[in-house]
Image 1 (cartoon, rainbow, N blue to C red):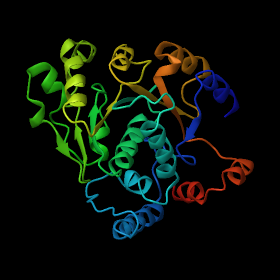
Image 2: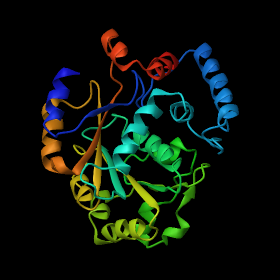
Image 3: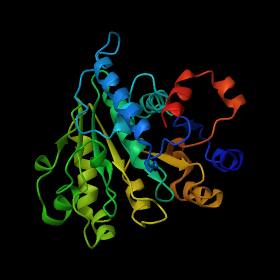
Length: 292
């Protein structure tokens, strides 16, 4: 963690761990016994979601099992995302944050998984509504985490002028909705860099004063339009996966975005050593690591 930490520290940001290892969106296959345990855990989680003190009451039918477990009240992922939520709701500079771009330097770093969890946690707040927009037009995955069809979405609005009201989908959680990416187009860069995309960001952010909008971005190294999208939002959450993008790549991305633009860095799938665990003193992290 040392090398990447030093590179990221130049951005003036704390690293927010997304919990123990293997919390990214590309988990390997598990044994039948482990799968059975996961199913039982999910059933327990469904029964416990309405317990006193949290007033959580929504349907997770169709959700990816990893998202169900990660968004539970006792998971390390949820606890880390709550820290990020606090930073968003109470920024150091005092400026209100309404639109956030979640991105990574390269692919398979878990940005969509982090975006989904941030949406779930943000929507738990009192009076906070959240809209997630999947802007990864090449390899969309955000809708799939919630069991939502991806047959139409952002592409249809930008290319065919389909009204946004026809594209917003419910996720099963109250106050949390999503605009899927839609089927991959032939010209994703042109669509995302268009004036129509700029107008969309302005519209969805300004239409409702109590709404937060999260944009799941394409990986910066794979799509030139990422830096353009970053210009249209208030802040950026950068996802860095252990063993993913190199130090110089991350450093270059931070410099391109601008230090003041980044509100948080989520360090994903890292290994916690014994000293880290003692310093954290968090049972949450151990729980989630045991599950995966």
